[in-house]
Image 1: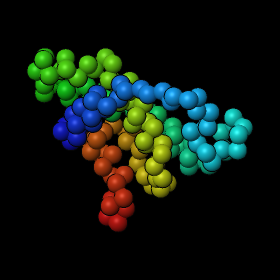
Image 2 (image 1 turned 90 degrees about the horizontal axis):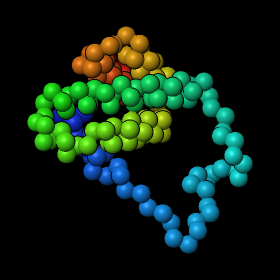
Image 3 (image 1 turned 90 degrees about the vertical axis):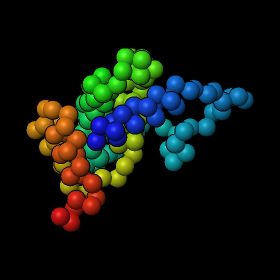
Length: 138
């Protein structure tokens, strides 16, 4: 699990700071499904719970990845990660991808329970493994 957290931080550090601007004044909305108004589409109760769980998990998992990196890496390796700048990017990208998933009510409930019950990183990540789709049949 530590390797997974470390790999996530590394990947986001490598590709998170690139920003490109469109030449030629792109005025199309990013979401072409929107009807032009600025109101977000109505969310179901499950989607609201999922969004709240993702927003709560993002910072916690980033903290866990940083703690793991500090415990397992040398000072030089840690400096290369530039944790001060990459941590917010890691959190933002996790929350964005988490919200984009279609989770079942069981999976959202696992996220909620894990966040509420687990205070340490190891038990938290172990608890979150119960949200995998393969855990449903067990």
